[in-house]
Structures are given as structure tokens and as C-alpha cells.
Image (cartoon, rainbow, N blue to C red; front, side, top):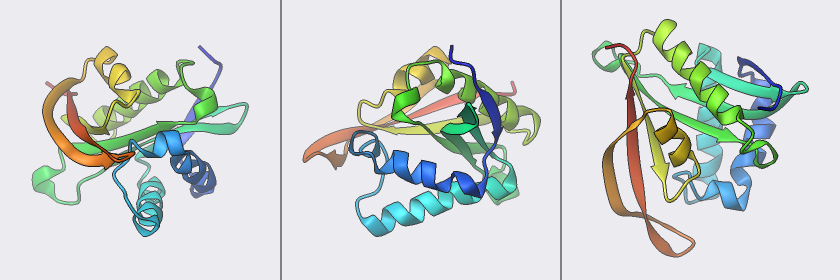
Length: 164
């Protein structure tokens, strides 16, 4: 595993997140179609950093990936959250994603008292194997959810029970 540190995400991480999500290969695994949707999504993603529910993995002080819990604002549903995660292309397959995910789960369980977390995955994302290795369970599949590169692709929803 590559030597790294995990810290809370900062607004200064925005350019890294934007760069990773603009990458043609990685962007196809996220649910936006227009430039406006992209910009709003990236700003929303980084905006959760103000709630201390987003973690950044760094290598030699430089951001290498970000995982963010999308906290729910209402008490009735505040016991669970969706999360999104991305690792910069040059840092993938080096154990950073597994470390970041483990730390995000710990934050969700111990700081936010979440009972379970979900992850939405589009198409054959490399994130699927990490989720399966981390004992996430597939709870829903929706075929032909969106077109990627002109071809219909699926959406999968994974869940992990944290407290129970």
C-alpha cells in the first residue's frame, strides 16, 4: 500500500475533484449529462466539506482522492447517507481507495451515528470490486438507466450496515 494520510476535505481540494471528474474515463461513472449539471454536482460534492463529512486521502501532501457522505437533512432519514468517492487515476489500484473507504465508514458510524450507507454506481465502475471486497451488498439494479458513450448502461445501488 502506498504511504498516505487521511484528512477532512477542504474547499482548496476543489480543483483536484474537478480535474478527476472531468477525466473522460472516470466521468462516465457519475450521473450528469451537461456542463451545468457537472459544475453544480462538483460544487455540491465539495460543499459537504463544511460539515466535516468528507475525507481526502493525500500522498506527499497532495490530494489523491475524495470520499463524501451526502448527509440527510431530516431526522426521519438522518440514520443513513449516500456517498460518492473518486481516486485520481495515477493513484488507483494502490490501496488508497480501501483506506479511504474504511475511514469514511468509521466517520459515518462513530461521528454521525449512521446505521447504514449507500453507494450508487453507474456502469462497470472499478468501484464495484472495492465495494464487494468491503462487504457491501447489492440491493438494487436498474438496467438501461443512462447512456454512456452512446450505449445504455446500468445503475447499481450498494448498501453496508454499520450499526447492527
